[in-house]
Image (cartoon, rainbow, N blue to C red; front, side, top):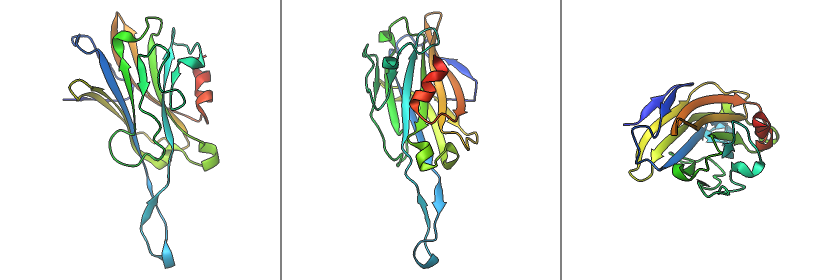
Length: 199
């Protein structure tokens, strides 16, 4: 049974679970339906297209040493091959995970101490969109070998005005991997602006 986390909570991933060598990190969101009058004043709600992008920042000593250490829709696989992105979902439509990232924990080079998972809205300023228009955002960790959901963190705060979310992180401590629920919203307008937080 999956563990539901709250903001700031941390949990062991590999301690006591030595067989866990790979994880799937799923990120999901749903645009809020907005009412429109439609034809002659009649009609139901519609949903705007939101192009949200999930990315992973691979940190050395809590810092982003190079933009080559980012896995995103622009670069679907890390140089070391331990992190792989599922690819870009342009609309966020449908239920379940919108984008997934696979991490081979035992293959992550030892100089990386932390992997940070972020989601930003593509062209947020141009589209005049923010996370106040998105509901049911979450990050979850699954054991892909058994398809068991290990943990889930629902980002249920009001993120109005925020254009990027630092959702969660996995990090090494005492040769074990742990997960931390972050849930921080920012006004960064691009992935490049997010990078600066870790320089």
